[in-house]
Every structure is written in C-alpha cells, then in structure tokens.
Image (tube, rainbow, N blue to C red):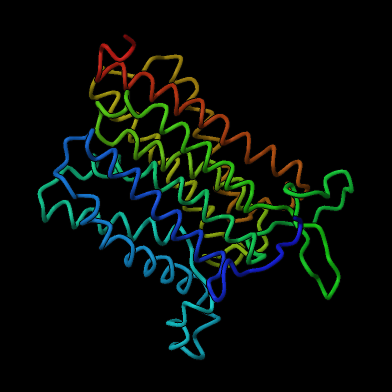
Length: 325
C-alpha cells in the first residue's frame, strides 16, 4: 500500500477524477438534506451546484496557474490543459464563495446560512479527494529518515532518481484532519444552526489551522514569492480573521470580552506575528528540525484552537441563551 497499484480506477477513468466526483456527489447529498432543516427554498442546493462545480474547477486551476506562472509564461495556452494536472483546493473554495455571494444576492437568500449548509459536505469532499493525491503520488512531504516511521500510511514510497524513498504522507494527514473537521461540524450543527455563519467560520478556522501545519512539510507547495507558501499564509490570515470576527460579534452581543479570555488573546496574537514571520521565512534557520517546526506551528494552532472554542462557546451562549439546555 505504500505505492498505489494503479492511477486508474477503471479503464481510462483515473482514481483522482473518480474520488473528486464521489466527494462532490456526497457534498451535494449532505447539503440537500441540510437545506430542508435550514428553511431554504427547495432545490436551492441543486441550482447552486450547477454553478459551483464548474466555478470550483476554474478557480482551482486559476489559483494553481497564478502561483505557478513560471510553468506557463512561455506557453500561456498550456494553462488551459487542466487534464495535465494542476489544481488547488483553496482556489476552488474562493471561487465557490464568490459564486455563493452572487447567487444569494440574485435570489435574495441569506449568504451565511447557505454557506453553513454547504461546508460540512465540502470538507468531507476534501477528505475524500485527498486520496486522489495518493494514487497520483503527489502532495507528499519531506523524506522520512527514521526507519521506525517508514510505514504506510504515515509515509509513502516515492521514486527519487529511480530509487524508492519514504516520504511523509501529508495527503493522508490532511485527509484525517478534514474528516475530523467534518465530524465536529456534524456534531455541532444543531447548536450552530441557530446562529448564521458559525458553521461556515468554524470550517474556515479549523481547516486552516490544520493546513497551516501540514503545508509546512509538503514538498510541492505553491509559493506566493520566494519561500513564502501561498496556502500557509492564507491559512494564517483566515485563522486570524475568524478569531477577530468572533471577538467583534461577541462584544456586540454580550458587551465585552471576559478578562481571562483577553489574557489568552494577547499571547495568541504575539504567536500569530511570530508564525507570520516564520511563514515568510525570516527566522527559518531557527526551526530547521521537523520536531521544532511541528512544535512551533502546532503550538500556535493548539493555542488558537483553544481561544476559538472559548469564543465559540461564549458566542453561542450569548446569542442563544438556552443553547445549554
């Protein structure tokens, strides 16, 4: 299992394509079920999906092309050859969100409520789609030199100059993280349904917190410039933005932030600055070892997760007084 037996699922159909379609189908199925519980007009999800699917593919490709332009500047037409590979999930999410905004404005639907309906299925589709990277032998991490960790699914064998080398199975780590996020969204959907936007912001934060750490160990990241990883920087900005939005919303509903929570926000903010500096690789030499990098980035994610769930709990109780009943 450390090496996929084939890239093809059946005939000329690649595993990658099959898993993407499977994930999209499950996402639509879950969203349709949630649509009924969210008082949205019938067939809203189906109508929206007709726009979301092509927009997601286009956005995923455009994101990849923008951050890999050196591959296409000599032959710009080759950017259209999507069948040759090269898409990025963040691009699909951004494009999808823009489509949701336009769709909801046109039909006068609540944007955040529609996003709440869509994101549980979206993150499940991401968990499934990551296994397409396994069959394509991509989205892997750095070499694993310790024999004790050279086993699947912790690692995968990748050919390096004709010799198989164990690499970190970062696609698997992200798949597990995405599935965990899906379970959290599923478990909290009843409570979150009373406050529009909470599920959507939970998805953005939780997915980004995991991606921030995992992305640092990938060997095929897209770079914004120099050594700045595009997805890592975007993940950090999303985490910070969601925390700020939650804090602002909490202050509007309950009139203030508890002193004990303010005490946690200060180190988290300072830690975020340090992580930002790390993302642009200013102090990169200080965190060259995998264990040090994992502790640093994981520490930030853990601290931010703690602050996030405290804010979430306070916000839910402030906007839905009987949420604990």
